[in-house]
Image 1 (cartoon, rainbow, N blue to C red):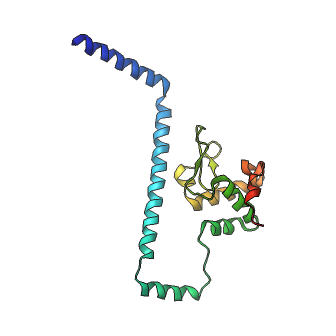
Image 2: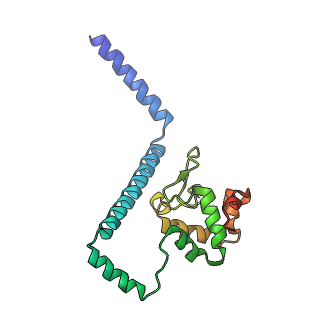
Image 3: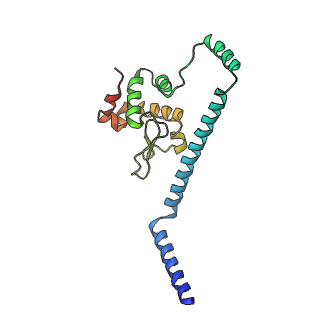
Length: 174
């Protein structure tokens, strides 16, 4: 019995040594932090969606009164497409086509998973080149803002592979 315990203890030590050798503590912590950021961003979006549903389940009379008030003032387009149009202005059609080619307009998209730091959000912004927190990149408003900031730094949409390869052209509105 004692020989078996010693044998398993030795095996456990070997496994721990191998694991320590294979994964540095820094890499492991980085993986944990990324997982937490993704989870927090997802939880925040789910709470926002649930709160939005609660607002839309208001009594019918309150909704009618709200509609009457809104009719007097022009309404902003709060859809993702509307937000992209607002932020990108004259470049909106190209921006929409790039976002469609990159993520199919999915604000929760995570791409390039084979890389050490994937790309996130509508415009698939890479964490290799841009050091924003994952939660920020998964926020549609922030992702759009950051994409505009990136495209305004001289290279336009050349930072996006789907633009350089012409894939975005399939999604241009004619």
